[in-house]
Image 1 (cartoon, one colour):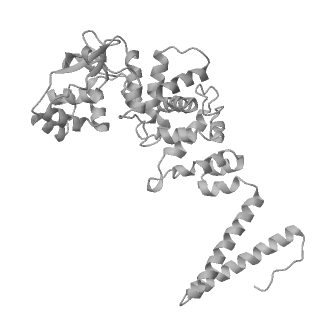
Image 2: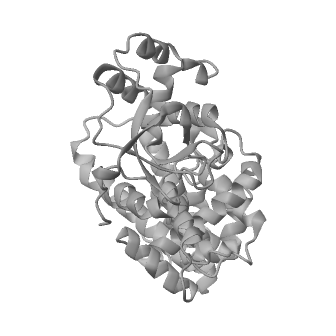
Image 3: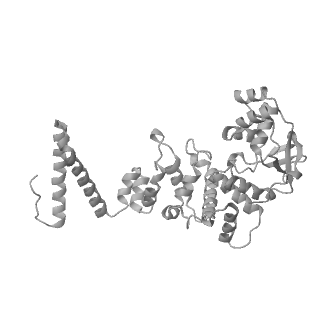
Length: 371
């Protein structure tokens, strides 16, 4: 755990002099470098700014939670708030709802009914952003306000960029892992996934309708990278190949489409996340991959991942199991109908046809019993 925040260093700074952090790991790529109004709108829609407005407006600002600020990279006369952006956004809205283009009714009511509208907030100033980052890691990675996986990845990249780390890349991953109490391979996978997300964003999400950074499930993508065959399919050496120098962008487009593009009834080609194992098997077999790429459902494309003999015998075993279940419950059936007879006839015809094909392949005269 980093050193505790020193309360003696707290000072009050005017809200108007405090700027939201355009490099906040929470923010999606399209909000990076944005001004306060754009950041406020995103935070309101995606964080608990509305609740904070009610809390601060009704009870005042709790002085025990100072904002962590720096003038490093800030406009003249301003402080960038590196920690406490949601609290700052809530306070700014209490004082000026016009910071949102179209403030919702809840925002206007919270401001109109507020007892407290702080014009100054308690802050602790740091010389540089990097001096705050380790505290952020404790608070948001292992602490009580955890970031999601994509936010963790952005934080780790910032930390590496601001703190020169000696040694080979894997040694750097180890150092970053120690900062968040995790493993080097997990850190590497997060950073590899972040690199892919950045590329996808640059390609405008390959034109996939409704897909943006907020709808792209980063954890699903990094889980997919846990499968070596999916990494190979993309042209990655493994899940820790952050540079992705041999990445096949067309295949990345395919993968993103399979994972996130919604079709009928809001389903993707992948379906559920547990189907990643099946997808990994499919992309590792050329014929299965071609069938899936051509539109065959994933569960059917899986049939092409094994030798034909294995698929055939698995199907026979499944059929026998189904027939055994029917045999075990038939004595409880009170009344049968014509449809039952027709299905039995169809199964009988299939068995006879299969037997004939197998007999020809074996060059055998062995016949079935009475059918």
